[in-house]
Structures are given as structure tokens and as C-alpha cells.
Amino acid sequence: MAKRSYTKTPMKEQDPIVRSTNFSEVALGYTDEEGRLEAIRCLQCKDAPCIQYCPVMIDIPGFIQAIKDEDMPEAYRIINRFSNLPAICGRVCPQEKQCEMVCRLGKSKKFEPVAIGKLERYVADWALENAVSEEPIPLDKGKVAVIGSGPSGLTVAGDLAKMGYEATIFEALHKAGGVLSYGIPEFRLPKSIVAKEINQIKAAGVKIETNVIVGRTITMEEIMDQFDACYIAVGAGTPNFMGIPGTGLNGVQASSEFLTRINLMHGYEFPKYDTPVKRSKKVAVIGGGNVAMDAARSAKRLGADQVTVIYRRTVEELPAREEEYHHSVEEGIEYEWLTAPVEYLGDGDGNLVGVKCIKMELGEPDDSGRRRPVPIPDSEFIIESSEVIEAIGQGPNKILLESYPDMNLNKWGYIDADEETCATNVPGLFAGGDIVTGAATVILAMGAGKLAAKEIDAYITQQKDQ
Ligand code: FAD
Ligand code: SF4
Image 1 (cartoon, rainbow, N blue to C red):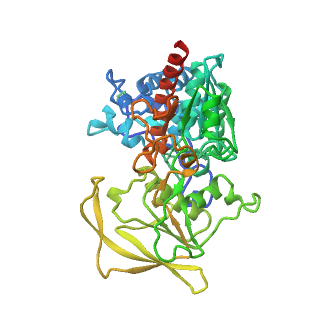
Image 2 (image 1 turned 45 degrees about the vertical axis):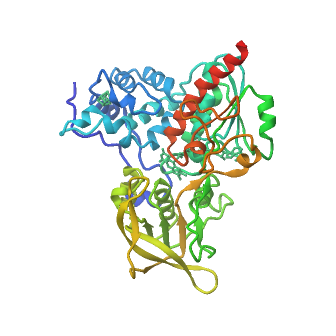
Image 3 (image 1 turned 180 degrees about the horizontal axis):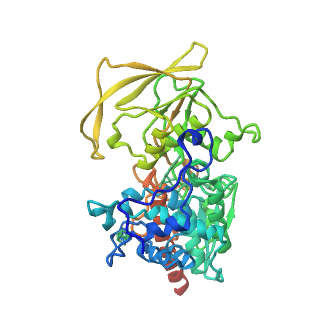
């Protein structure tokens, strides 16, 4: 048997200079040999801490053992029992802060943790290539409406179909997937992969009705009348703005608009697709999360010579995934740390020409426990730029929420749902994902969907027994 290597088996990637000019996927996947080499690094721990740190509790040693045994159908069956979207999670989950963070192999000084995410992707891609899917079961236990087709809605619907429920997803946009389709760019998450995993869920019997805005096209009251239960997973897609002087200048935009034009509407393929998207030589991106990384790397791919990310804390506090940050640096993205924009500057004709910034220092910790950035007096300077993309967070979309006052919201304007059951104050109405937690992660949204599916099953069973 091959010797266990100290480091993770690297996954081949497109060269940074080449990839910063195209939208094709950066990471190229494991070969069978690489997959097995990585799988033999797993210690097969009996108490497997990695499982406890996975929000959907995948049997990680179980599927890795099946890879070692060269039994790929079994590896996929094991993952599929816990996750409906493994090819997506294998690509975008922050494993370094979850399963891989507690991996026992990585606790020994000499070894890196097992590359659990890359192995998950390897198995899921194998299943998609080999068109492996589970046999659907009869859907006769009841009818459930799901609002929103992001990872939370897809998970609840997929799990309910596996339990024998007829689940119908209502989606406002013309394409299913939520952020997976309109937010995360092709070079991190190919849309063909998203489509294939959604097709697997549809093959289990889930119906998806696109172009339906709940609260406008159909009301919540109508849905509650027509279905045995309902799960709301409408995400948090409304952008926040800095609101500083100059926000109205031509060239200032929100990341959600910029990324939606590129991902959902293929703006990067203009004029083949009829969606214009702004292309500039000098671009500034405000923020430090995954959204900021995606916007900066997309702007580079659209032809910018200089892309500067402006972040008010330091690299230590950067909320983006480590891998995305490293990839961005390799691709030539520049960073202004401890810096905040104070004004957008125009050319007198309404066009942006620069961002006036101020330097910050870190003071006392704030409510989140992170040290609060404090402006340094008289430290203003200007970054030349004809395009600014603000990526400073999103809030709830109010269309559905305002149309249904019966449902309680919390003080931040998100749906008030029980953490342990996803139940709202309205009987039979459940909610989860970003619309409950605020902007979070794919896997946390999926975790809520899994929990809700069990609770909805219990609720409908109890109603029918009465
Ligand atoms: P969403 O994915 O937001 O889906 C909600 C869906 O509901 C949307 O399709 C929306 O159109 C629909 N909807 C809204 N209102 C209505 C209505 N009234 N009627 C019908 N449908 C409606 N997380 C990670 O783990 N890793 C990453 O690398 C990562 N990168 C990200 C990059 C970007 C650019 C963004 C924006 C987010 C990223 N995230 C990442 C966060 C992650 O994508 C979200 O936490 C996750 O998608 C939330 O899932 P959700 O199902 O709650 O909502
Ligand atoms: Fe394998 Fe690491 Fe999980 Fe142990 S903690 S079972 S070594 S992946």
C-alpha cells in the first residue's frame, strides 16, 4: 500500500495567468489515482470528529473507506444519504473551518488534515459523469410548498421527496439554484454542475416552478390553503450600500447586480448573450467576504489591469475562504488593508474617477468579538478607479415578508423561526437558510433544510393522525 503523505494530495489547477483571462473552472478535480492516494491518508477514526463538524453530518470515514475499497457507487450512496448537493459542497464549503479543522490527522504536527472537500467533489463528479441516481419512491404522503430554490429549498425538497412527499418549489427567477446560479461564478462553481445536481433532485420527483414571485404571482394565503405545509427559503439577496457621497455616480454598483449579470445572464459572453456588463481597467471592490473575492476575480477576467480590494480590517480577519483569497492573490488582485472608502469622486460629468479612502487601525473588540476598525485622522488618500463594486453584505428581500404580516419577524427583519425545528409562529409554516440566519453559508442553509424536512414530516404525520 502507498505510504500516507504528510500533505494533502494537491488538485491540479489552471495556471493563474491563463485562468485570470477566462471563466472556466480553476480547480480541475482528482484523477482516480489521486483520489485513492488522498483517501488512504484517512485514519478511519472511530469517534470521527469530522462528522460532528459537518452541518449535515456526512459519514466521512464511511465514504472515504469506500474510495479506498475502489467502490465508487457505495461512496456516492453514503454521501447521498446525507447531502443532495455534494458536487456543489465539495467545491464551495468552507471545509477548513468545519470538518477539516478538526480532522485528527491534521492535529498531529507533521500532517495536514485529509482533503475531505476535494474527496467529496471527486465522488460526486464521478456519480454525475456516470449518471448514478437513486430510484424515486411513490410520493403519496402529502404536498409541501417550498419557496426559493437555493441550497436550503433544494435540500428540504430533495429530502421530502426521499421520504415520499410531493414537493413543489416556487422560484422568483427564471433559473433554479439561488446564489449557486446567480452569485457564485462559473470559475468556482460551473453552472453545468449546479444544473446536474438540480436534475438529480427533480428525478426524485421534485417539481420546480420558475418565474413565480411568492407575494406577487401567488399569495402566501393561497399556498397555505393548497399545501399541507410550507418551507420558506428566500435567502438574503438585497444588497446593502455604503451610502457615502458619490454613490449615484456612473460606475458604482452592488456586487449582486454585477455578479447576476455575469453568472445568471452570461454577461461575460457578450455579445453572444445580450447582457451588457461594465468592463473597466481600474476597479475597486469594497468588502472582504467570498462575494468580494468573486467580484474582484470576475472584474479581472473581464479585462481589468488593476483590481484593488478595499477592506477595513487585516488579512487575519478576512471572512473569505482561505483558498479564494490565495487564488485571488495568484491572479494579481491587490489589497488595501485597514482602509475604508469615505467618498466616490466624479469627473464632473457624473462618471466615477476615484475612491477617497481613509486608513483605519484596530481598536477594542465589537459585538462580534472582532476588533473594531477606527479611522486614523488625516490619513485620507485616493485610489484611481472608474468602477466600484460594493460587496458589504446583503439583507432580506421584503416582497414576501411584507405581503404576509401573520408571520413574525425578528428585530433584524429576518423570519423568526425556531433554531431547533425551523417552525415559525404560523402552524405548518417553516423557514430556514439565509432568510432566518442572515447571510451565511451553503452548508448551513442545507443543514436547516435537512432539519426542516424531518420536522415537516413529523408535523404532517401528526396532522393526519388527528
Ligand atoms: P439563496 O441561495 O439566496 O436562494 C434563495 C432563492 O429564493 C433565490 O433563488 C431567490 O430568487 C428566491 N426568492 C427570493 N424571494 C422569493 C419570492 N418572493 N418568491 C419566490 N422565490 C424567491 N457560501 C459558501 O458556503 N461558500 C461560498 O463559497 C460562498 N460564496 C458566495 C458567493 C456569493 C457571491 C454569495 C452572494 C454568497 C456566497 N455564499 C457562499 C453564501 C451562500 O451562497 C448562501 O449562504 C446560500 O446560498 C443561502 O442559501 P438559501 O437557500 O438560504 O438562499
Ligand atoms: Fe479521517 Fe480525519 Fe475524519 Fe479521522 S477526523 S475519520 S482522519 S477525515
